[in-house]
Image (cartoon, rainbow, N blue to C red; front, side):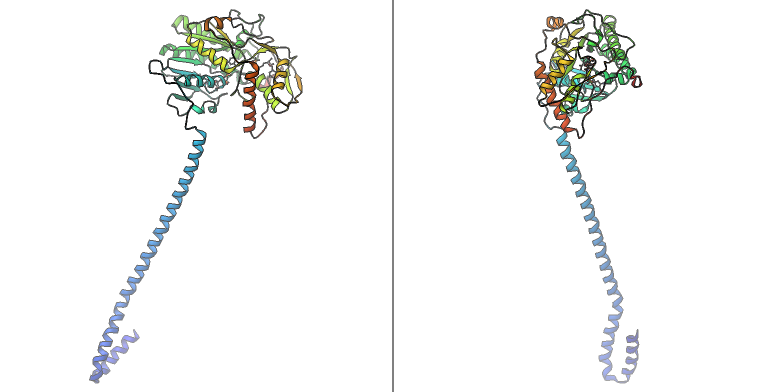
Length: 431
Ligand code: NAD
Ligand code: UDP
């Protein structure tokens, strides 16, 4: 304000001195104008800086947004790469079947050891396959190479509960199969083989599907007849530790023939003998998996009892061929599917040792297990006659494939895989 006062005083003074007044008046107007405009100019400057700040802030926000989007894209790219790595983009080759020949086939227990090999076979033949499994002993990994294929479906379901689905054929395999697994929850094992089988037979009746039941050599129990033919009724302890499985399967067979007689369901019954091969559960406690694991990890090979008890081992692809042949046949009585070459467990331990090179595992004898069947060998004349089937894969060839599979699985695992132990006399706490 000082300068303005000065000009007012100067204007009054200069009015007395006419000459200078013109010059100063002009000057005064300019200066006053400048001062009057000053706030306006300042305002413009301030708002300009404010706008720039705003712009900068916006730019910063946009940059932050771009960076976070870039990060998200990177994360997505990484998970896509991982997904591509896990799920093969290409599927195994399959045959083409036209709609008249292509069947919709349900495989219960299809994520298990035998089931997954059967699924491979049926898929490659060009059928539509639906797997139903509760993953108790099965794994998605066994069938993951089909996940995403147009002909394949995987349903997480417990067959103790009813299932509604339209199918032409049912391979009913769902049930734990190894003694430690089926003894873990005997009540559930019985339910799976009885209630579960009723559900599957009921489904077959409703949709008029053919159904194959996976029964077992255990229906013969600890047999008094050797080798076991299908006409033998068996020798089973109904209250022993194996009863939940043995009797469960016997009821499953009884149910099958009751549905066949009363409801005209087309049933097939396969009595499966000891089967081995890749995708066996690593520590299911069966003799094949235990001995291979023990030999590969240089541990003692554990023989229960005297080692003179016998078993006959078939390779899984032979079993799959037999199951399909039985389903496609018109033969409805039970059929043994197994390899008739018999070995005692002592011999079997030596065979495993010779196949797993460089092993120096010792043999360790443990107490015998309760109700262990002493001799087992299938009479396969029925399968030969009605299915034109017999096993093709030798024990040596099959075991080498199984050993390779176990070797790879051990490498995948970061820690040693401990073989399961079977329940022994007095181990009442587990069941
Ligand atoms: P596994 O344990 O590998 O497979 C059984 C499958 O059934 C698993 O995927 C499991 O998760 C599933 N399952 C179990 N209970 C179920 C339920 N309640 N609902 C849905 N799914 C269920 O056994 P495996 O060796 O592949 O045996 C297959 C079939 O063959 C079984 O019925 C078994 O009794 C029979 N069998 C096998 C052998 C053998 O040596 N492997 C011998 C005789 C009979
Ligand atoms: N067995 C053995 N050592 C093991 C596992 C099993 O000596 O580590 C014996 C078992 O006692 C039986 C035979 O091998 O006599 C076959 O057992 P597995 O559990 O494989 O099948 P099973 O035919 O008894 O159902």
